[in-house]
Image (cartoon, rainbow, N blue to C red; front, side, top):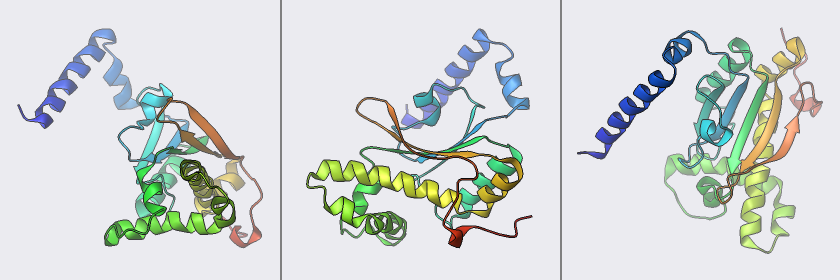
Length: 212
């Protein structure tokens, strides 16, 4: 049996188990999606949003990419953000990184990861540049790595707040709150590292003054 065929068999077994425990399970999911949370996480297979938060399908709207980045030219991310904020009316947007992130580790090196990954990782290198004094003051390499993971999450939350999508929702509906978390692969615990409540003041350079 091919490995991908095992996935299909496991899917059938999972669906059967769900229906046996709750005959209306899939009927409810098919007609309702009212998540309170948008999760922007890493694509790493060890960090599944629903599993590590013990939530059910329909409770978290999820976007994942390498190193949980919020890049202002990423139409995929922005379309997810706009849909979640404008249409699903989420109350919280969570950027969740994780210690041991390969994307962040790559940004600490000077290796050539080929064109597209180089472009993506450069965004994390910018985080290092912004916080160079703090990071260069950390002599332990693992501690420096962990701190860059945390600072990367902080900067991505800040990037969210700079979007007109978030600022418009803040102005009109005083939501969503923004959260920066880091998940520990070694212990399974989420560490909250940063938070921005709705209408947190920003550097005026990034504030829109004519939102409709």
